[in-house]
Length: 520
Image 1 (cartoon, rainbow, N blue to C red):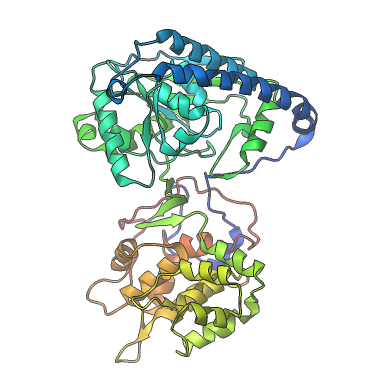
Image 2: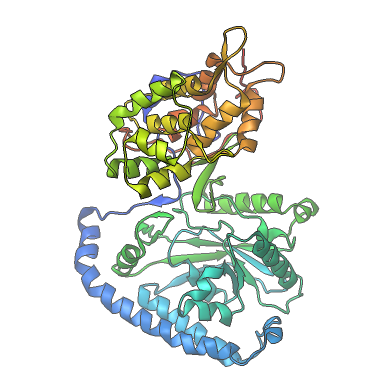
């Protein structure tokens, strides 16, 4: 990993004693500590929060009819063109109400650095980091530009009306066709030579905890036009405002934020970034370079962390590893249902003896000793089915074994090999590409394409398969991939000590002199 130096070979036990916890930029929990934090939370909160929330809500709801009035009576054809010069008095009213609403929330002063470019100079505004519940305040500073937002937000009262008011571009995360239309619309507006107002977007795509920059989505960069980077800073470093994928809920964030006397905010407009010919033809390169450019200005690491669907992931060589593997949820479900994990070794023995291989829904319930239909269905749905609708019970056994905090990473790796290896004609146990794929699929959900690349890296074509020693080198000693078993697959309750943050969250999938792996 580029964030930490990793030796080519290391002692797994020693690594585990270090207690490294994988850095998770999508997680933030804030608990008041010290006199002043507790004073604001427990004393000022009950006073300031109800008053501020009520006043902010009043100004928010006052925007509803005004926003609706601006687009009222307009046809779809009219709305497909810019309406920035129509009913401008309503635009000014929304602007005033928006600023007043944020003032009521505690944003009394906003320090602005630099100059905002015109829409003809920079059709797109790129804002980062996206880390708080109140980041939309940047739209007020930018004179209410169009934004790129989720289509689900149109159904939220008031918010949906405001999105229609400024002719926002809506995207569905679950519809590939929608994403293509958004790209085309962004390109159309960006090349309108100032006819449309600027389009503002958060290229990280989701909220992080602000310590690093998440991977920039390339979609909005396809237009290949100049963009203006916009930085957001909270100088008093209020962790109370941070709202991430997992952590403080909306109510707690609102309470923590509105219980402060005031909140400082700095917004800096960097010089317009003009893409190179290479960046114009490669949106991913454009996005990556822009991320590094803004990260340098912020003094924060640029990382490859991203949200794929509803799963936060980090690159690990050729793999996309979930920061919170979904099979932990299976463990919680089974414990709640009364499953005895003391029986796991017996189930493993059945697989090793070849007694149990593939099972259906009813047989799975029998093996696990559970009668709750909903629980069995959820467990069964986690694993891939074959043509006959059966699942591989070896995968079930491996996932159950991974829940055991007393089982070391090396022991888990040995078990994985024993479960999925096969004996060849010479009596040697080898792991095929299919077996290797099954291990990674059951533990981290890796698709065959990803696991196939890793297998090809570990096992040259001329070799019949991966032997036990080769697999253990991959699992507990490989400079890059060992982090999978040593850290990401360690149970949350394994008693890690002081964490050592791995902020970059990635390592090269290509062998280099520093990370070359030899399967000798």
